[in-house]
Image (tube, rainbow, N blue to C red; front, side, top):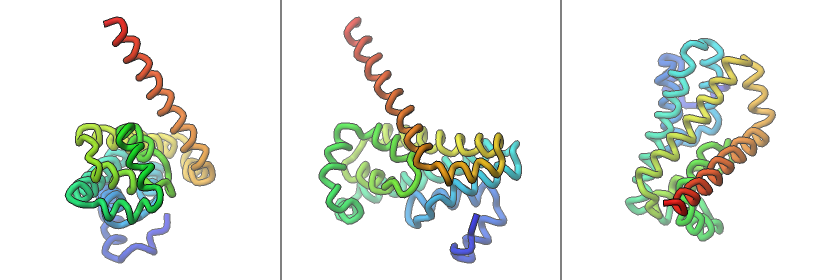
Length: 199
């Protein structure tokens, strides 16, 4: 994990605080300062060094990312349409239409996919187009929890090989995760439809 590109104050905070350092990086990455992949690498590395504390490290990454996303969501909700169009570019119209129909699912998938997936665009869009707060929080919490606990589990189980595997196969990992989420989504819709018919 290369921290040398970060500001010195942030390097010192990460080195000195462990779980809080993970929280800080996840918060900054999800809100105002892009630090792609760094929080994933930190969860993996800290979990390898101290497997018993893996749930704590994954929790810190999840909560930091959730809080960062909340900040970005409310900034966008207060008047971030110009910011959204700047980040989304020509995709803005399609993203808006998709979010109107599938806000929860879009946030869930966006939160699971690795960079360079445009996750911040989805969060900003959710704020601008006022995806309900409860759905927003639940989707982000689920997506980030699954992602960081999954990485922590792989780190504890496979050690350094987990880090290399995730970096080498991040696209395949993303598509497998996406497939599982879509399957759960379709099964849930089917179940709700069946329950609605029998009611």
